[in-house]
Amino acid sequence: MQARSDTGQTKDRYKRWMPQPIQSAVERNRALEEAEVIVAGVFMSDDGPQAATKDERVRQALRSAAATGYRGALGEVLILADEDSSPHLIAFTGLGTSDKVNHNVVCSAAAAAIKKLPRASAIASVLHDSFDGDPSPAVEGYSLGSYRFTRYKSDKSKDVERRILHVEADPDAVDPAVARSAAVWLARDLINEPASVLTPAALGDRARQAAASSGLSCQVYDEKWLREQGFGGVMATASGSSLPPRFIHLTYEPSGKPTSRIALVGKGVTFDSGGLSLKPAASMELMKTDMAGAAVVIAVMSALSHFEATARVDAYIPCAENMTGGSAMRPGDVIVHYGGRTTEVTNTDAEGRLILADALAWASETAPDALVDVATLTGSMTVALGKKASGLFSSSDDLRTEILDAAGSAGERVWPFPLYDDYLSELDSDIADAKNSGARWGGAIIAAVYLKQFVGAEIPWAHLDIAGTGRSERDYLEISRGGTGTPVRTLLSWVLGR
Ligand code: MN
Ligand code: MN
Image (cartoon, rainbow, N blue to C red; front, side, top):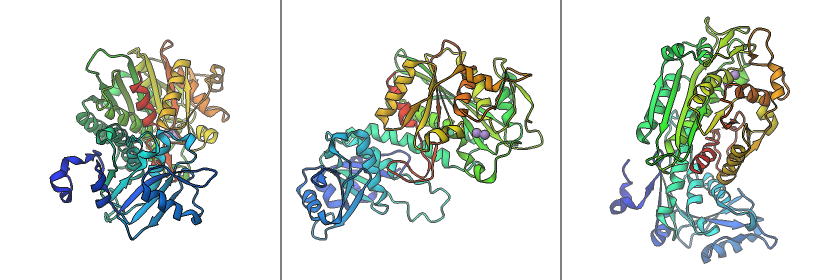
């Protein structure tokens, strides 16, 4: 990508977000001269809204806005026109009360502001004045809030190339925010791609591309290899589709001796019709999202070299399409998984656990220090937590705490659930080691306990059920409608902490 010609001689002044048309730069005078709008934070208080900047012009404009009833609650945005000064527009974005402000609040406020400025191409920002002067949380929010998936729109006129100009802040400070948001963009792009395009083979190709541009090694295994290795869950799930399955293995090697050996597993069901236990039409419409776990894992891997992660990380991604073709798996079939454990398929729509079973057993053989899987696994999880929080299950108290802490620092909601081993009896089978589907109540826990049977007994393991959070029907704060890229930032933060 070339820098915009109108920035001419100063093309290196802008920090590029790799996959998206946003740039970021620092220079006070230029910022105010070039920008169409200035974005400033506002705290909510008992004495009315308070400007979270020393910028006198902003403070005065906020005082003049007193009659509007604007309070400065998080996500509340007010845009004022002021023809007499430059830039003409001021956008106030609410931060809530000042005692609660942190990196994530500023990120959310920046995202809320930029969503209300869909046509603004040059934005001056003093949002870093709200919280310790660091421009990176605002940059992360501007980037996440600018996301749009327009590949299949013939009208590209709404694709705005944006420049963020930070008024008096350190330009290099934004690099981590740029890398983090680029990873989230990658996950969103993968999730939003239609299943006719993002087939299991295409997902393998995308993983190869991500690996090539971020210094990872990548192996994509085909159906022949999967059959030979005995990945019965992956083969059975793919058997009703004309598209063959794949198994992706990505590796990140740190430059020094690894501080930890981590394995990540992501569910890559590129489309889930339910198979012969067919979903109703309304539940099938968005089932291209069933590879969100895979997208999240690929996205996390793509950012590791940028952050010079010190852990070695291996990602294992089983990819298959669950369809109803004449060779589809049937209710009542018995699958032999990698490692030899067997499953009686009682519901072909509980296919995620079938492919994850193989991958978890495979990953366990490498005896990692920690094994984490991410999957859009159960409707039950969404019933329990709604659409704005992911469920966490872990066999290790330490690992659970680490991931909850990482989620807190990343600003993503993750909530812990129990792994009650006796719940496995709900899946007792007359003819195999377990059924894949059983009682309705506690379905997310039962699914997690099912998965646990495939994880090496000594391996600290965690399972993130993102059935509710992988996709959003709404645009709010830094979440965009469509694929969300949750919980890329949590996992990235966790891996970097190992
Ligand atoms: Mn399913
Ligand atoms: Mn599924």
